[in-house]
Length: 273
Ligand code: KMH
Ligand code: ZN
Image (tube, rainbow, N blue to C red; front, side, top):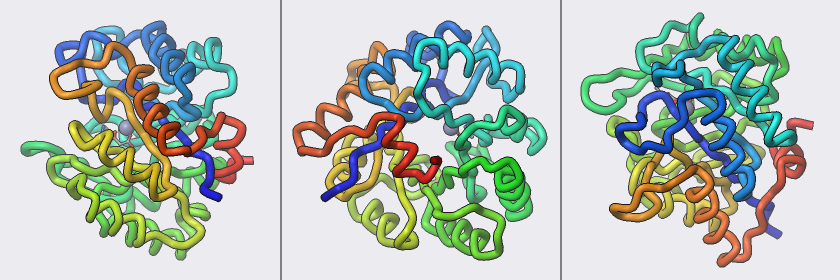
């Protein structure tokens, strides 16, 4: 029987702004509002970036603490996954700050890539080792963010050297301008390229969010949706909340007879307990 489906909501991101969609959250209250809309619709994990009140991305421990407390006050059981990717241009020390809060899981970016236009998202091998080792020392599960197939190979190689905790869990980020495209062929290639005991979810960027989600539901993978990846409910229609995006993914899953995992079930699937 196919495993239940873990829905992750990436509610905020570091690049998308209120100018793109007025519902993008900046303040802790707005972040809590968006997290609640996502949890109510079936999200078991919140992938979290935080902002200053004016929208500037930050990796400040204190800001993460405030936002995580605000999320827990409205969604007490949800798994909160802080980003260690932060925003393009941030230093390693800046990016690593939320690990001080001892989350259950955090993102671990597994390679350098072009990130739209001339932006470069830098994750050198020594950075990945530093981030992976830090997560091992704090017993934090890494979600390996892979923007291309070679980043899967990097994660597997570094896990064999003891720098990334196993079983591996991947997020295939597909459709970034500079990374692998979000096509069925490429998703199949990614899903078939990971170790047998690994789990995976997919983030389809922009218009490939729901096509990739649908395919992941069918293949037995998991799904991430949210404003960080896509702001549209359908062509030309902005989503009013992250909850609307999660609800759409949940609706597709139900139509395809894939049950949704609650946070407790998600913890078991991801070996967090
Ligand atoms: N904001 C991107 C540069 C992550 O969360 O680990 C990186 C990112 C990945 O969002
Ligand atoms: Zn992120």
